[in-house]
Amino acid sequence: MLKEIIMQSWSALRRQPLRSALTMTGIVWGIMAVTLLLAYGSGFRSVLMYTFEVFGKGAVIAWPGTTSEQAGGERAGKVVKFEQEDVQRIRADDPLVKLACRETVGFEDISYGDHLANAAVRGVCPAYGEMRNEVPSDGRWIDSEDEQQRRKVVFLGAVLRKKLFSGRPAVGESVEIMGTRFQVIGSMDRKFQDNNYFSSDDESAFIPYSAASDLWDARYGKVIVFEPVAPQFEAKAMKQVRATIAERQGFSPSDKRAIFMDGREEYRPIYDGITLGLEGLLLFVGTLTLGIGGVGVMNIMLVSVNERIREIGLRRALGARRRHIRLQFLLESLALTLTGGLVGVVLSMIVAKAIGTLPFLGPAYEDTSGKVDIHLQISWQTMLISVGVLLIVGILSGIMPASRAAHLDPVEALRCE
Image 1 (cartoon, rainbow, N blue to C red):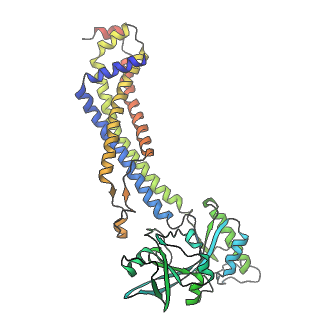
Image 2 (tube, rainbow, N blue to C red):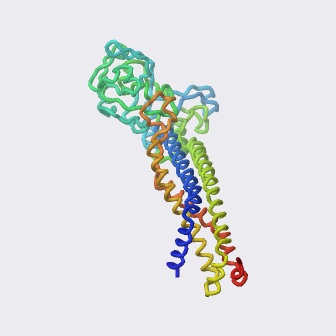
């Protein structure tokens, strides 16, 4: 029975090929709007979340402040200073902290031959690279032997490397910092991070903390960088770190002015809200466009019902039930929408391939690589959402015509001229 109904539906559509094709045009345009807008929204979200997470997915930056609460025999107003013993206590006593180290910084001239640049020279520990997502594109990152042996080695950010070496290989070469020669052991590609402290990582030079101590007084770290064991434990890890340092230095663990902390997870809902909100808005706009095409399908199907009243009456007289008539017109509506949808998806993929990349953050960073621009890619998630919207539109477009056809009186329908 179902096969017969499908064949009858296909035969009815073939009787009016031009009308069917014109009706499907609205569906094609609508599904292209849904698919391409979803692809744009997905690309926008990918770029924005990349610039957020490239800073370091779990890194927390702790800044020393001044106590505001009296604790024990200590008065308020004591300046907090980060020492190596604080980091050692955090590593030993705080189970929710995965990695931790101090960071110091000096803004110094770095020279290579006749090239000179002023940059942030940052003394860090080996674990810093993992916490802050410092991924080498050439060479390697600082290791524990570099730190223990106070080696004069340096890891360069992408922009600083370009200023000093103008595109030539940097690994193995030596640069001069404060009159001391440092060997370049590695460098990284552009990070395009949207959040910095001290300076952009792209314009920084990273050296072992012990080597920084040989250049300037680094007894007290400028900040402590640590990473929780998992993002969901960020707030508790912050509390543990503050309590550990407070116990050692003698101030209240509830004194938030003593240590300021900047984590990533507290900002994630903002980014999620922006990106998901935009994707929802684009889906709504695309669905409205597709809905207009669905109205066109509904109108054509209503016209088709009026033209086939006698046919419907004859079929009812020969024993066809209302559900058979209803199913036939629903299938005709779905056939129009799904065929148009298939064409629309194929055209969307062709258009997305032809456009490729749309400018977004590239001009702001003066970058031509396209890494932080929007790439129009039709993912399987986009396809599933588009097909789901298409099916809903197809069913809604066919319900009214199918219901009208199914409720025609057979006698009155046979009398219709």
